[in-house]
Image (tube, rainbow, N blue to C red; front, side, top):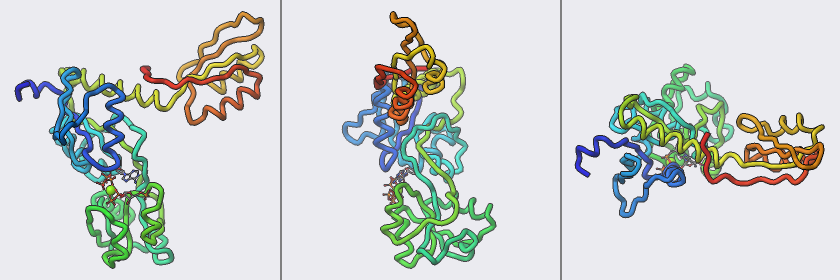
Length: 292
Ligand SMILES: Nc1ncnc2c1ncn2[C@@H]1O[C@H](COP(=O)(O)OP(=O)(O)OP(=O)(O)O)[C@@H](O)[C@H]1O
Ligand SMILES: O=P(O)(O)OC[C@H]1O[C@H](OP(=O)(O)OP(=O)(O)O)[C@H](O)[C@@H]1O
Ligand SMILES: [Mg+2]
């Protein structure tokens, strides 16, 4: 492919390391895109789908999308907020879920107002400065690349503001979160201003549709059961599905077969409840792929 032909390709930025990288790549693989990196390539071309995938630092992705250097990218809501980029969120991806919290030594600081006049370490200075300004709190913000929790032990700061998932990193550093989370975050797909009628728009729409399908297939299972006529209304309420359950008459008088989508995380509970209203032969099937 010549450089000119590359101009026709949709440019998609993928995180090259960190918490977002592996799940982002496996999401695209599940949607049948060619994102295999053999030798640490900086980009790969999926010619079949008209896409050039760039592997970039997670922190730079929102900016590249906002600037129009790439058309689409996977990043985190917190990274997008910190970048200040004009990128539009198009899809939540359901991984890299975290909160962004303030933390300090237990007993030292327990309330946002006490942050006033303190030294605060973070890797998200723009996000933190905005939050502090809105809260009317003044603090000296110290920007670090990572391992922010160490800043207190090192005497660099009394407060940290960082990503918290399990809370283990904070506990290991002898720190405790306080105050409300600055935000909750998860991985997202962001887009810039792709022209609606360009060839790229079709590739973009297809990609978003496919990813939505994979996410749906990961979230839902198909549930099927036999239900006595008297319990049908209860059954619909328990398994409303995405639109409506499919119901067909069984050969046995007064019985119906019901098929519906159910959230995977709720399968066992829904089965208990279906049993409770007299349903029988209840089973679920995992979805490989899904399209609304
Ligand atoms: N431990 C974690 N659990 C869940 N999400 C996380 C975790 N650490 C970071 N994230 C999220 O991952 C996204 C990417 O952050 P980042 O690139 O800093 O990842 P990282 O795993 O911290 O990588 P690095 O090793 O480069 O610091 C952010 O949206 C952040 O909220
Ligand atoms: O609450 P936890 O489950 O412990 O996860 C949160 C930690 O994970 C990330 O750190 P990472 O390992 O990416 O190192 P970093 O601080 O250098 O980014 C994040 O920056 C927190 O430190
Ligand atoms: Mg990190």
